[in-house]
Image (cartoon, rainbow, N blue to C red):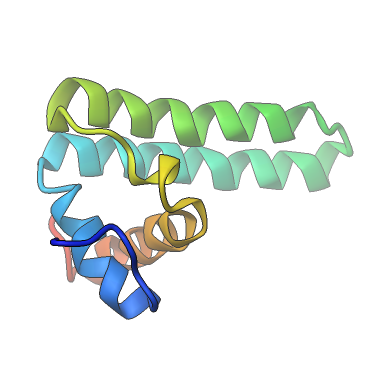
Length: 102
């Protein structure tokens, strides 16, 4: 895009999807997000908040590997943390719905 400023998530999401064009990157995001959900489950199941750290490591670790090694771009999280967080879960849901190929 010509600008790095987004006033609405609806404007940001197409940019976010372009930043995740490589299927391997999307797969790593999907795996990381699934592991985050497992970590959230563990927080409630065990009451141990170490799973918060594990969740962050899983979510960001898998995503950043995908960006640095496959997309060769800088994760949007660095400039747009809120929209990127929402975008990750929107992409995750769209993959489950079959709207985006895994």
